[in-house]
Length: 175
Image (cartoon, rainbow, N blue to C red; front, side):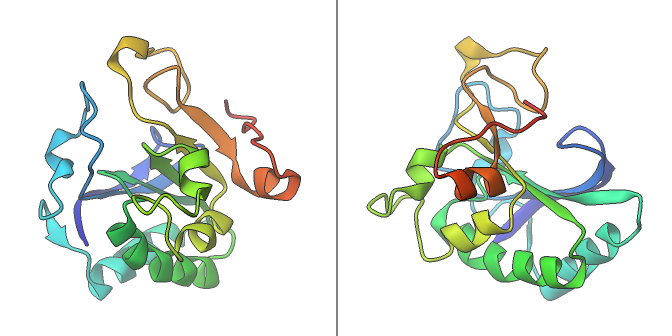
């Protein structure tokens, strides 16, 4: 997996001061995407152990709330295979850090075991570590700059732990 950018002390992509990891690779190709260069899976730099170490160090200070993973598309199956062990490591080393994931896939698509485009053996373990999933493709005709933490009105901020517990989609209090 490659990544396009890492932002430390980011306040735009989730609650609190966070580190944001923009992964490379996306098959959605949403019209009006703000990060079109990350569609290419080869864009950016390789996601190495040294990069992982740097991200984990950046999340350790008490004033950092957690990590946000966006892209590109973190939930492309090939990206999930790399993100899962990294997110498990992050959770083990900085258990108080929250994880937000932005995905063009909907919750329903991600949970559909027959949807091999985005569902893999890594999907549920990744979501189980996630506090908020911002789901759904960006839709230019539904763009709304007044929304919290999302670009278009079709996108949802899903409280993942509560959704997994209740068995139905529960929106985050940040929605």
